[in-house]
Amino acid sequence: MSFQAYLDNVHAKTGKSPEDLKALAAQKGLLEPLAKATVITDWLKADFGLGHGHAMAIHAYFKGKRD
Image 1 (cartoon, helix red, strand yellow):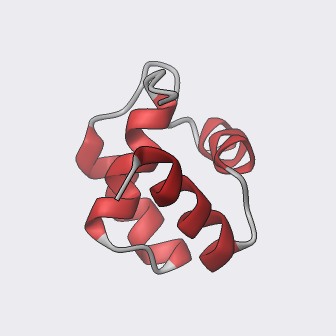
Image 2: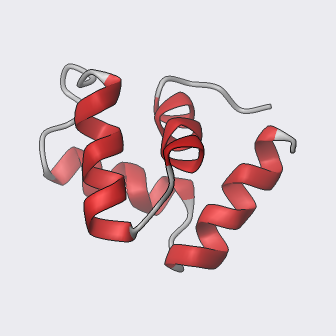
Image 3: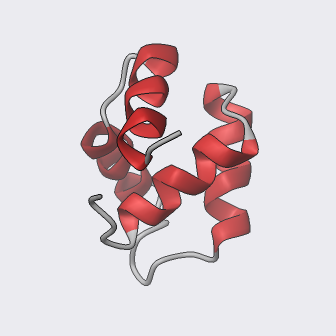
C-alpha cells in the first residue's frame, strides 16, 4: 500500500484529513516539540480507532513525509 493510500484510508475512516488531525494534535500539545510516536499513535488509536500502520502514517505525515 502506498503512503498516499494510507492517508486516504485514514480520511475515509475518520472523516478528517491529515491536516485536520495535525491541527487537533497541535491543540493537544503533541506537536511542540513533536511527541514520540507512541504518544501520537496511542491517541490516534484511542480517539479515532486507527490501526497501528495508519497511525504511524499520520505520525510520519506530522514529521514531514509527503510521499
